[in-house]
Image 1 (cartoon, one colour):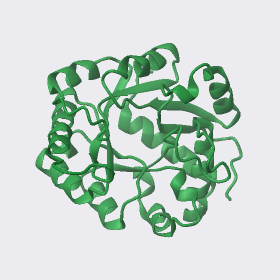
Image 2: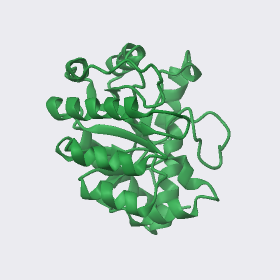
Image 3: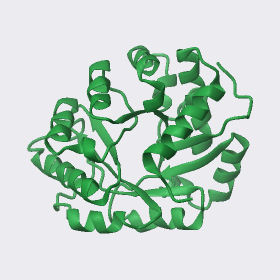
Length: 263
């Protein structure tokens, strides 16, 4: 792997530090981040009920930021109020709306409720002037179609934990979106994804953990944490045949350029 010299810092652009896996462990999590030169983390909302805990992390720690949104796997089918989303997104520690999107992998039957929820998030993001954090699984065609129909490019954002095809990546890039890679890119059986990671323009690339899930090699199967984004970045740098510090500097610059967090 391309090793870090320690000159360039990293950002975990997507993690779930409000999940029970991290209760009572925040001092250790933050110490591990520091030891791996991971300076910031974006804490992702998956439900409005859980949003206050996400926001509390961003309010307590200056190097944590928050999003607000309802994950497509949340099967509480009550329509999302885009006015409420926009209002919550106005908080200075909230830098994006999401995670939102479509996930047909575990959902059967009528999925129109997911599409309507996704549309509400896009409209709220455009109104609030905040980027989107988009999840798509087994739904790339509909995800891209709705992004185009709702003019998601006006808000911008990122397709997180990317596992789709080069064609899907190219379509998202054409809409002005970033593409983020997780620990999946380190897995031996992720050959097609590794090729996408080679080809996404460096100025549109982000890295993440999706903690507590998807720990990268050599920690696969264990609880993931923001410090481990270093191993994701090392693998992407290796694939692109560039110094790891260059990859770290670029993804950190991309993060701050996209999300524009408060100083």
